[in-house]
Length: 234
Length: 82
Picture 1 (tube, each protein chain N blue to C red):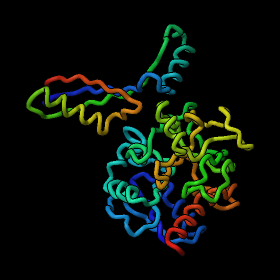
Picture 2 (cartoon, each protein chain N blue to C red; picture 1 turned 90 degrees about the vertical axis):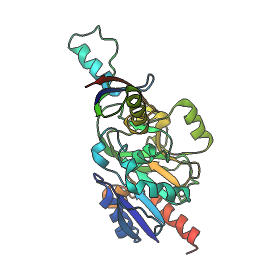
Picture 3 (cartoon, rainbow over the protein chains, first blue to last red; picture 1 turned 90 degrees about the horizontal axis):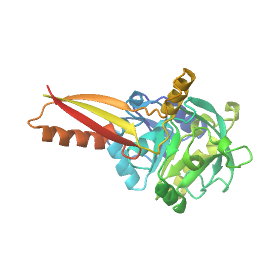
């Protein structure tokens, strides 16, 4: 089993993802340079957080035209697992692999702290080891994480069960106070209709060991590993 | 050669957090008569083309493909001959 972590100019969480996969979860992982054009040898792809292309113009807007993104599109169309974390999520939205857009936090601050997430959909490759309604403690670190879609698209997302994680309080209550950035419907993570592409603002790679304050990020990674193992029959 | 000034603004209904914060700051400076502040982007492009119509077509394409995100932003532009 082998993962690819894509490195764009300005990616900053690439080593965190690499560390989580290689050193904690003990699977093979390569860095994949943004000029590469082939992803066939990988079982899963991660677009890490950071500030690709300096966030120029709009977050993710320029990274979307990198050579690697054609390969990411093909890979996801073929059913491959693509996880976009933070800036990776922003890139997947600009590339039209997921619906919606991420705009400036409504408080205008860059937010970097632990918070709580409710598992809304536990039937995806990324969350199937969680209970439905389980509360995960995972940190965020972003200035533009305010998820926005129009009302019709929101209805579609709800109907299709594409909302995977929502911001909540420690008890799992979805409240306005638990929403850090103004995201519509407290949305923290969405998937595509096929469920193989997930975008999330929180950083699971930053909480895979108890000494980091939480190891709940492992629920996401272990779900992915388990899904792939079953698919490969290993 | 043509010079094109492109203006990109958040659509009505999309929260403009920067605009709202700036309006509050203006209000605290005594500009209470300000009823709304919207903050957008201004982009200037110099472009070679035979006719103004072609310039217009190319700019529209650029805005739709890259410069603006149609989910949240509207664009307008003004073309001048150089």
